[in-house]
Amino acid sequence: MLRNRIIPVVLLDGYSVVKTLQFDVRRNLGNPIVVARIYNSRNVDELLLLDIDAAKENRTIDYFTIEDVASECFMPLTVGGGLTNCDHIEKALKKGADKVVLNTEALRNPDLIKESASIFGSQCIVVSVDIKKDGDSYNLYSHSGVDTGSLDLLEWCKEVESLGAGELFINSVDLDGKMTGYNYDLVKMISEAVGIPIIACGGASKPGDCTKVIKSGASAAAAASMFHFTDYTPENCRENMRTAGIPAR
Image (cartoon, rainbow, N blue to C red; front, side, top):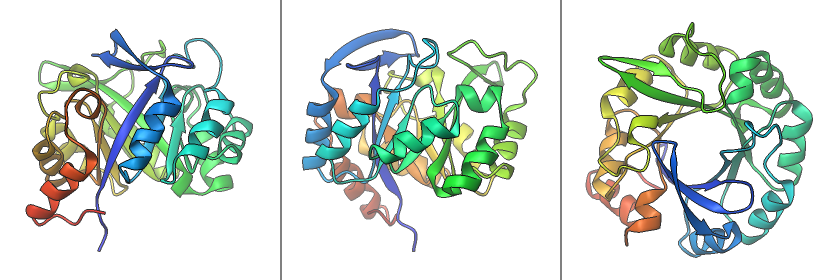
């Protein structure tokens, strides 16, 4: 039986760990190597490392940081930030990443999803989808300024799947850093539209939120603030899931 995952998210602004609020206000949290060591000691299922400024600054996530973090952790490592071609992806994988996240460049050049999946395998390719709510509807959002006005959310998720992505990383911009719970309706809607696993992110505040988002259709619950600013650990989340009868690693 497939076991669901709890994934801490580590956001970088180049070389420092930060935590955002609705993709805007930032709080500096120190060195990514130290953070990786803490998560490694807690036996997390997977670590997601994202450089949130890389695409805007026309650079990639720092490869030496990937290498340093990979050397400190013994869990699968997923990285993203400014990866715009297969050479970038190959280098990130060679530095120790197990999977990569595509976001800005996937919107600009969807063929990169297909090309990279064919070369490295679908299991290596995660496409991030940032979403903002507008009234009763949901819209794609690009922090890097890509025009997403003509893209329908569900159609884009279906296209991402058809192009060969192995997973979707669903990020609710409105709930980022607010710790008020995930957008469960959004996760349910997308999970019913696609067949690939969904990583849900944005709003987790307690272990029960992770359990609820898995029940809503996610395969993995990702969180940053909950692990940075509370005493809850990934094991607390896994235990809550097991108590609810949900398989957890």
